[in-house]
Image (cartoon, rainbow, N blue to C red; front, side):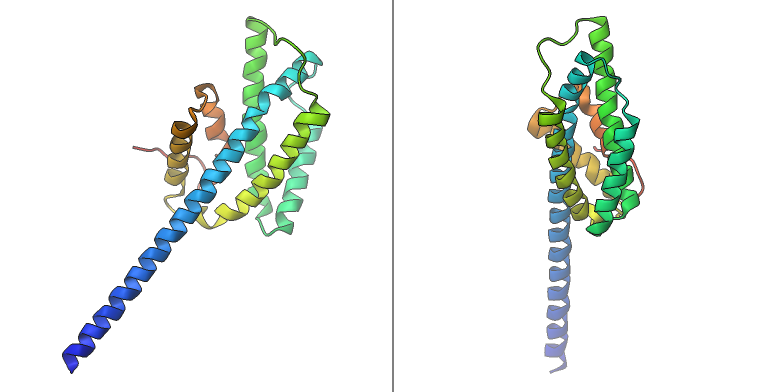
Length: 198
């Protein structure tokens, strides 16, 4: 009788462990899917740096637009708080987006100065590119809400790095934008930065 209780207790313990392991694994998969989606959105936003830079170049505007950046950061902090995201996290994340986009735009300006300016008309900033940026901002805020649970995990930087590596291999990501992508993901984890892989 005592033996059957021990077996029963061991089975219950084993089942509890299996459920806990499966639950942790499912949570990790869910976090990684959310992270992949966020990396995709960041990548899409970085892809818009070139048409923005083209418009600025052709309209003789500087890369920096401090008043627009300030307004965007205030808006995302306010919207983040309304949906339960730490506004400081949202502010830091979107500051990274702005800085990474400016890195690409400055590199393009430098290239156009040295080699050849862009040809043809740039997509209209107000009617085409900014609405795309606004939609991405909304999607990114939803994406931030989904990665909040993994932000404080010790393996967060490694998981971000692995997510970036996977994204690059799946999409044949432009190596010229690699540093900008890493910079744009710099505050996804509370510890900051993107870890190493391999």
